[in-house]
Image: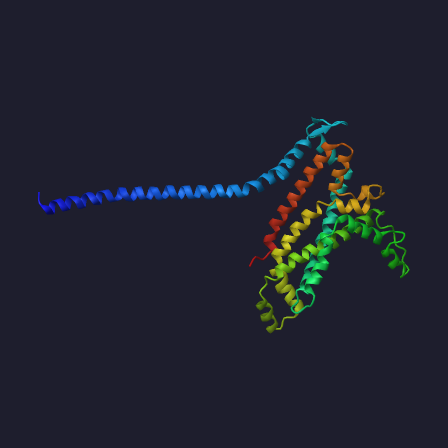
Length: 325
Protein backbone atom coordinates (compact mmCIF):
# COMPACT_ATOMS: atom_id res chain seq x y z
CA UNK A 1 0.00 0.00 0.00
CA UNK A 2 1.35 3.34 -1.01
CA UNK A 3 1.98 6.22 1.37
CA UNK A 4 -0.63 8.42 -0.37
CA UNK A 5 -3.29 5.74 0.06
CA UNK A 6 -2.52 5.46 3.76
CA UNK A 7 -2.80 9.26 4.18
CA UNK A 8 -6.14 9.33 2.32
CA UNK A 9 -7.59 6.57 4.53
CA UNK A 10 -6.38 8.31 7.71
CA UNK A 11 -8.00 11.58 6.58
CA UNK A 12 -11.27 9.80 5.83
CA UNK A 13 -11.23 8.17 9.28
CA UNK A 14 -10.55 11.52 10.90
CA UNK A 15 -13.45 13.15 9.02
CA UNK A 16 -15.74 10.29 9.99
CA UNK A 17 -14.82 10.59 13.67
CA UNK A 18 -15.21 14.40 13.76
CA UNK A 19 -19.04 14.48 13.99
CA UNK A 20 -18.94 11.99 16.85
CA UNK A 21 -16.48 14.19 18.76
CA UNK A 22 -18.62 17.28 18.06
CA UNK A 23 -21.71 15.41 19.23
CA UNK A 24 -19.98 14.29 22.43
CA UNK A 25 -18.68 17.82 23.06
CA UNK A 26 -22.18 19.28 22.45
CA UNK A 27 -23.82 16.79 24.78
CA UNK A 28 -21.21 17.62 27.43
CA UNK A 29 -21.94 21.35 27.16
CA UNK A 30 -25.67 20.62 27.29
CA UNK A 31 -25.24 18.63 30.49
CA UNK A 32 -23.16 21.43 32.02
CA UNK A 33 -25.80 24.01 31.03
CA UNK A 34 -28.54 21.85 32.51
CA UNK A 35 -26.62 21.49 35.77
CA UNK A 36 -25.98 25.26 35.87
CA UNK A 37 -29.67 26.03 35.30
CA UNK A 38 -30.68 23.47 37.95
CA UNK A 39 -28.24 25.09 40.37
CA UNK A 40 -29.68 28.55 39.62
CA UNK A 41 -33.21 27.26 40.24
CA UNK A 42 -32.12 25.74 43.54
CA UNK A 43 -30.56 29.01 44.69
CA UNK A 44 -33.66 30.94 43.58
CA UNK A 45 -35.92 28.53 45.47
CA UNK A 46 -33.67 28.83 48.53
CA UNK A 47 -34.10 32.62 48.60
CA UNK A 48 -37.83 32.59 47.77
CA UNK A 49 -38.77 29.77 50.14
CA UNK A 50 -38.81 31.83 53.39
CA UNK A 51 -41.04 34.48 51.80
CA UNK A 52 -43.26 31.84 50.23
CA UNK A 53 -43.53 30.06 53.57
CA UNK A 54 -44.62 33.30 55.24
CA UNK A 55 -47.20 34.01 52.54
CA UNK A 56 -48.68 30.52 52.83
CA UNK A 57 -48.74 30.47 56.64
CA UNK A 58 -49.92 34.04 57.29
CA UNK A 59 -52.06 34.77 54.22
CA UNK A 60 -53.17 31.81 52.12
CA UNK A 61 -53.84 29.37 54.96
CA UNK A 62 -55.91 31.86 57.05
CA UNK A 63 -57.99 32.65 53.95
CA UNK A 64 -58.67 28.94 53.41
CA UNK A 65 -59.53 28.40 57.09
CA UNK A 66 -61.80 31.44 57.15
CA UNK A 67 -63.61 30.22 54.03
CA UNK A 68 -64.15 26.85 55.72
CA UNK A 69 -65.43 28.43 58.94
CA UNK A 70 -67.94 30.46 56.94
CA UNK A 71 -69.81 27.20 56.29
CA UNK A 72 -69.95 26.28 59.99
CA UNK A 73 -71.94 27.22 63.07
CA UNK A 74 -70.22 27.70 66.43
CA UNK A 75 -71.61 26.82 69.82
CA UNK A 76 -71.46 28.97 72.92
CA UNK A 77 -68.39 27.13 74.22
CA UNK A 78 -66.76 26.71 70.82
CA UNK A 79 -66.81 23.81 68.43
CA UNK A 80 -67.75 24.18 64.78
CA UNK A 81 -70.45 22.12 63.05
CA UNK A 82 -71.05 22.12 59.32
CA UNK A 83 -74.08 24.23 58.38
CA UNK A 84 -73.65 24.77 54.64
CA UNK A 85 -74.86 28.09 53.25
CA UNK A 86 -76.78 29.10 56.37
CA UNK A 87 -74.40 31.90 57.29
CA UNK A 88 -74.47 33.35 53.79
CA UNK A 89 -78.29 33.23 53.68
CA UNK A 90 -78.43 35.01 57.03
CA UNK A 91 -75.86 37.55 55.94
CA UNK A 92 -77.61 38.42 52.67
CA UNK A 93 -80.91 38.94 54.51
CA UNK A 94 -79.33 41.07 57.26
CA UNK A 95 -79.96 44.83 56.77
CA UNK A 96 -76.88 45.64 58.88
CA UNK A 97 -74.69 43.78 56.40
CA UNK A 98 -75.88 45.91 53.50
CA UNK A 99 -75.61 49.03 55.64
CA UNK A 100 -72.00 48.14 56.48
CA UNK A 101 -71.24 47.82 52.75
CA UNK A 102 -72.76 51.25 52.11
CA UNK A 103 -70.81 52.79 55.00
CA UNK A 104 -67.57 51.24 53.76
CA UNK A 105 -68.15 52.49 50.21
CA UNK A 106 -68.85 56.00 51.53
CA UNK A 107 -65.60 55.90 53.48
CA UNK A 108 -63.73 54.67 50.38
CA UNK A 109 -65.27 57.58 48.47
CA UNK A 110 -63.87 60.05 51.00
CA UNK A 111 -60.41 58.49 50.66
CA UNK A 112 -60.61 58.71 46.86
CA UNK A 113 -61.50 62.40 47.16
CA UNK A 114 -58.17 62.84 48.90
CA UNK A 115 -56.24 61.76 45.77
CA UNK A 116 -56.93 64.97 43.77
CA UNK A 117 -55.96 66.97 46.85
CA UNK A 118 -52.72 65.00 47.09
CA UNK A 119 -52.00 65.66 43.40
CA UNK A 120 -52.46 69.41 43.91
CA UNK A 121 -50.34 69.48 47.09
CA UNK A 122 -47.61 67.38 45.46
CA UNK A 123 -47.54 69.72 42.47
CA UNK A 124 -47.19 72.74 44.73
CA UNK A 125 -44.47 71.17 46.87
CA UNK A 126 -42.47 70.05 43.80
CA UNK A 127 -42.26 73.52 42.31
CA UNK A 128 -38.65 74.39 41.39
CA UNK A 129 -36.94 76.56 43.96
CA UNK A 130 -39.46 76.00 46.75
CA UNK A 131 -37.79 76.25 50.16
CA UNK A 132 -38.44 73.75 52.96
CA UNK A 133 -40.06 71.26 50.54
CA UNK A 134 -38.80 68.30 52.61
CA UNK A 135 -40.31 69.85 55.74
CA UNK A 136 -43.69 70.17 54.03
CA UNK A 137 -43.58 66.54 52.90
CA UNK A 138 -42.75 65.43 56.44
CA UNK A 139 -45.60 67.48 57.87
CA UNK A 140 -48.09 65.89 55.45
CA UNK A 141 -46.72 62.38 56.08
CA UNK A 142 -46.78 62.51 59.90
CA UNK A 143 -50.52 61.73 60.26
CA UNK A 144 -50.04 58.57 58.18
CA UNK A 145 -47.31 57.15 60.45
CA UNK A 146 -48.96 58.27 63.70
CA UNK A 147 -50.86 55.74 65.79
CA UNK A 148 -54.59 55.67 64.88
CA UNK A 149 -55.51 55.80 68.56
CA UNK A 150 -53.51 59.00 69.06
CA UNK A 151 -54.96 60.59 65.93
CA UNK A 152 -58.47 59.60 67.02
CA UNK A 153 -58.02 61.16 70.46
CA UNK A 154 -57.10 64.50 68.88
CA UNK A 155 -60.04 64.43 66.48
CA UNK A 156 -62.47 63.38 69.20
CA UNK A 157 -61.60 66.60 71.00
CA UNK A 158 -62.09 68.58 67.78
CA UNK A 159 -65.47 66.96 67.06
CA UNK A 160 -66.74 67.05 70.64
CA UNK A 161 -70.28 68.46 70.71
CA UNK A 162 -69.90 70.27 74.04
CA UNK A 163 -66.41 71.78 74.07
CA UNK A 164 -64.94 70.82 70.70
CA UNK A 165 -62.84 73.25 68.70
CA UNK A 166 -65.00 72.86 65.59
CA UNK A 167 -68.21 73.82 67.38
CA UNK A 168 -66.40 76.71 69.04
CA UNK A 169 -65.36 78.10 65.66
CA UNK A 170 -68.93 77.68 64.39
CA UNK A 171 -70.26 79.52 67.44
CA UNK A 172 -68.15 82.55 66.51
CA UNK A 173 -70.33 83.01 63.41
CA UNK A 174 -73.57 82.25 65.24
CA UNK A 175 -73.92 78.54 64.31
CA UNK A 176 -74.76 75.97 66.96
CA UNK A 177 -72.73 72.88 66.07
CA UNK A 178 -74.20 69.37 66.38
CA UNK A 179 -72.83 66.31 68.15
CA UNK A 180 -70.64 65.24 65.28
CA UNK A 181 -69.74 61.74 66.48
CA UNK A 182 -73.16 60.88 67.90
CA UNK A 183 -75.30 61.76 64.89
CA UNK A 184 -75.70 59.01 62.33
CA UNK A 185 -74.64 60.56 59.01
CA UNK A 186 -72.48 63.27 60.53
CA UNK A 187 -70.44 60.63 62.36
CA UNK A 188 -69.76 58.81 59.10
CA UNK A 189 -68.73 62.07 57.42
CA UNK A 190 -66.44 62.88 60.35
CA UNK A 191 -64.75 59.47 60.08
CA UNK A 192 -64.36 59.94 56.32
CA UNK A 193 -62.78 63.38 56.75
CA UNK A 194 -60.27 62.05 59.27
CA UNK A 195 -59.44 59.09 57.02
CA UNK A 196 -58.91 61.41 54.05
CA UNK A 197 -56.68 63.65 56.15
CA UNK A 198 -54.54 60.65 57.14
CA UNK A 199 -54.27 59.19 53.62
CA UNK A 200 -53.22 62.43 51.89
CA UNK A 201 -49.69 62.13 53.32
CA UNK A 202 -49.00 58.69 51.84
CA UNK A 203 -50.50 59.66 48.48
CA UNK A 204 -48.45 62.86 48.41
CA UNK A 205 -45.17 60.99 48.92
CA UNK A 206 -45.95 58.51 46.13
CA UNK A 207 -47.12 61.22 43.74
CA UNK A 208 -44.09 63.40 44.51
CA UNK A 209 -41.83 60.51 43.54
CA UNK A 210 -43.82 60.11 40.31
CA UNK A 211 -43.46 63.81 39.49
CA UNK A 212 -39.69 63.57 39.72
CA UNK A 213 -39.81 61.17 36.79
CA UNK A 214 -41.45 63.73 34.48
CA UNK A 215 -38.77 65.24 32.18
CA UNK A 216 -38.34 68.97 32.93
CA UNK A 217 -37.76 69.57 29.21
CA UNK A 218 -41.47 69.07 28.64
CA UNK A 219 -42.31 71.97 30.93
CA UNK A 220 -39.64 74.13 29.30
CA UNK A 221 -40.94 73.39 25.81
CA UNK A 222 -44.52 74.12 26.83
CA UNK A 223 -43.43 77.40 28.45
CA UNK A 224 -41.82 78.45 25.16
CA UNK A 225 -45.12 77.67 23.45
CA UNK A 226 -46.91 79.98 25.89
CA UNK A 227 -48.59 77.37 28.13
CA UNK A 228 -49.60 78.60 31.57
CA UNK A 229 -48.89 76.67 34.78
CA UNK A 230 -52.52 75.56 34.93
CA UNK A 231 -52.32 74.31 31.35
CA UNK A 232 -49.08 72.47 32.14
CA UNK A 233 -50.72 70.88 35.17
CA UNK A 234 -53.64 69.41 33.21
CA UNK A 235 -51.78 68.65 29.96
CA UNK A 236 -48.43 67.37 31.27
CA UNK A 237 -48.45 66.66 35.01
CA UNK A 238 -51.74 64.78 35.35
CA UNK A 239 -51.40 62.58 32.20
CA UNK A 240 -47.79 61.61 32.93
CA UNK A 241 -48.62 61.09 36.60
CA UNK A 242 -51.52 58.74 35.81
CA UNK A 243 -49.56 55.52 36.62
CA UNK A 244 -48.83 56.84 40.12
CA UNK A 245 -52.43 58.00 40.49
CA UNK A 246 -53.61 54.54 39.47
CA UNK A 247 -51.33 52.93 42.06
CA UNK A 248 -52.55 55.11 44.93
CA UNK A 249 -56.17 54.61 43.86
CA UNK A 250 -55.80 50.82 44.07
CA UNK A 251 -54.10 51.08 47.46
CA UNK A 252 -56.75 53.54 48.66
CA UNK A 253 -59.63 51.20 47.83
CA UNK A 254 -57.93 48.27 49.57
CA UNK A 255 -57.17 50.43 52.62
CA UNK A 256 -60.72 51.79 52.72
CA UNK A 257 -62.23 48.31 52.92
CA UNK A 258 -60.02 47.64 55.98
CA UNK A 259 -61.62 50.43 58.03
CA UNK A 260 -61.76 49.40 61.68
CA UNK A 261 -59.23 50.92 64.09
CA UNK A 262 -60.02 54.53 63.20
CA UNK A 263 -63.76 53.91 63.47
CA UNK A 264 -63.37 51.98 66.72
CA UNK A 265 -61.19 54.65 68.33
CA UNK A 266 -63.33 57.58 67.17
CA UNK A 267 -66.76 56.14 67.90
CA UNK A 268 -66.27 53.64 70.71
CA UNK A 269 -68.56 50.71 71.42
CA UNK A 270 -71.13 52.66 73.48
CA UNK A 271 -71.80 55.33 70.88
CA UNK A 272 -75.50 55.37 69.87
CA UNK A 273 -74.54 55.88 66.22
CA UNK A 274 -72.10 52.97 65.99
CA UNK A 275 -74.64 50.52 64.54
CA UNK A 276 -75.47 52.92 61.71
CA UNK A 277 -71.84 53.79 60.95
CA UNK A 278 -70.10 50.43 61.31
CA UNK A 279 -67.92 49.18 58.48
CA UNK A 280 -67.69 45.63 57.17
CA UNK A 281 -64.62 44.90 59.28
CA UNK A 282 -66.37 46.31 62.35
CA UNK A 283 -69.34 44.01 61.62
CA UNK A 284 -66.87 41.12 61.40
CA UNK A 285 -65.41 42.15 64.78
CA UNK A 286 -68.82 42.59 66.41
CA UNK A 287 -70.00 39.09 65.50
CA UNK A 288 -66.73 37.57 66.65
CA UNK A 289 -67.21 39.31 70.00
CA UNK A 290 -70.61 37.61 70.39
CA UNK A 291 -69.20 34.19 69.46
CA UNK A 292 -70.92 34.02 66.07
CA UNK A 293 -67.69 33.06 64.32
CA UNK A 294 -69.36 31.41 61.35
CA UNK A 295 -71.25 34.58 60.41
CA UNK A 296 -68.09 36.65 61.00
CA UNK A 297 -66.15 34.35 58.66
CA UNK A 298 -68.83 34.81 55.99
CA UNK A 299 -68.44 38.59 56.31
CA UNK A 300 -64.68 38.14 55.93
CA UNK A 301 -65.22 36.21 52.69
CA UNK A 302 -67.53 38.99 51.45
CA UNK A 303 -64.83 41.59 52.18
CA UNK A 304 -62.26 39.56 50.23
CA UNK A 305 -64.60 39.17 47.25
CA UNK A 306 -65.54 42.85 47.16
CA UNK A 307 -61.90 43.95 47.32
CA UNK A 308 -61.10 41.53 44.51
CA UNK A 309 -63.99 42.79 42.35
CA UNK A 310 -63.09 46.46 42.80
CA UNK A 311 -59.41 45.77 42.14
CA UNK A 312 -60.22 43.88 38.92
CA UNK A 313 -62.49 46.74 37.80
CA UNK A 314 -59.73 49.25 38.44
CA UNK A 315 -57.24 47.23 36.42
CA UNK A 316 -59.76 46.89 33.59
CA UNK A 317 -60.50 50.62 33.55
CA UNK A 318 -56.87 51.71 33.67
CA UNK A 319 -56.53 51.18 29.91
CA UNK A 320 -58.85 54.15 29.35
CA UNK A 321 -56.98 56.77 31.35
CA UNK A 322 -53.52 55.54 32.43
CA UNK A 323 -50.67 56.62 30.15
CA UNK A 324 -47.51 54.54 30.35
CA UNK A 325 -44.59 56.33 28.70
